[in-house]
Length: 273
Image (tube, rainbow, N blue to C red; front, side):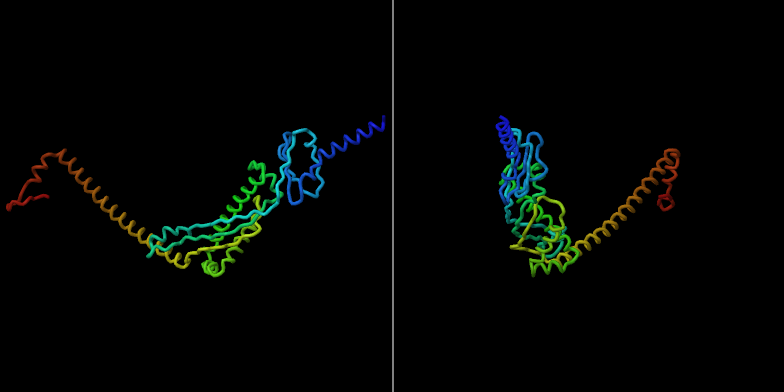
């Protein structure tokens, strides 16, 4: 009898152990996320090769294991923009030069396992397709942000634009450097390739900017001169009105002055004007 009870206890213990053992559920090259009704998303991802036992699995229908493959995701995108105030400067320069820039890039990346739980929880991801779509969206946003940053940084050194025209790989290195400096994010970008790029003439852009600034300077001077003339005219009109107002008060008080002001000399000319 004792042997039977011992055997039952061993079988029961083994069942409990295997019910909570989740490591074997996640195959190599994948990462698992456990979501349970009792605890929500577990903060620790399930990684193959590491022993992992979860008590939430002991309760029937309580826990679900979401398995995601750590496969690289690829995308092609075009990033484009205009140099600061480029459209405005172009209108004030002969020929209306184009100061827009663009680059077509191929990007490869994958999710960061340590950030997967937070990403799945925040975005409500339930399958591989949804995860891949989120990775694609994140990669495009990261590449766009860092491309803009690279262009803005290059504004302080016009020579960079000429170098980019000759060797597109230099801007790739700059973008990769910017991405490497990012400490946050759910996605790790592993490769960027520029397949096509258009960079405007930066020397011409600087000349157009100077032309516009000179125009604004002259415009400000003319506006200041016009304002001074308007102010002077306004003051003269105000003084004239004040003088007439005072005459009106005086004539109202002393009507006899009206007859006095109508006196004429021997030649018929008014004595007072």
